[in-house]
Length: 308
Image (cartoon, rainbow, N blue to C red; front, top):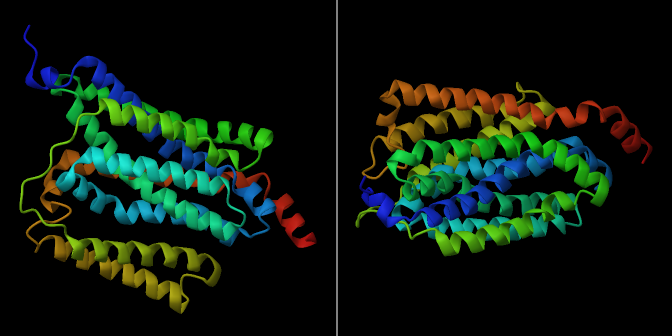
């Protein structure tokens, strides 16, 4: 049986080496979400802050990822996925170090945004690199492995986080990414082949990226302020209406530019749409992990904050 052109281009050791490097990056980005969630009650106590403030440790990270996902994926198509992925891996690792050394909750929130800039490059391009490295005959198994790594990271985060916090404090849940990130960077730099660039003449959709960033920022801020002020209050309501208008404008822009970030024609594929819907529902369920760590310790945290 003759090897396919893809198999000749990417030998087996390099394919599985790429899986190791990309898998470590995927593991860090998913583990980081659930492992930080479990540390939130500890952060409230040790950084002398409130629930409304500490939630931005999660929101700053998530907002950057959500707002930049499509733009980063587009840049990867234009300038090469490996280069941008490695930049994100280095930035995520450096951001993790800064988070672990944060002296205040404000610094932690800012450094989490830095971490998010790195994470979005890994999340947006990691799976795409795997599909390029593995031939079509092995692509399903490779993507299944990546999916399993995501599940392992999400499921094991609370347990690992609880153990690390009890043994080494909250700083360790961020610092654990530093050695993993260095190993992943060295592996990816050595074994992942350079990605092909897009066709000459492609342009980045700056208008679409700006509108999407504004819409998602308005939505996130509106949902956050609505918890304290009520969703019928002027500011949260205005932000949520602005987010809805921004979504409509984004769809309009994407249908009228020559090189859109998203080809909206893909949504005509029913199977593609159903998969996106299932992923959307899954992440709604996972959002509950943000609240669960507070359920057993909320009254204890509240008493200590009042006494302070």
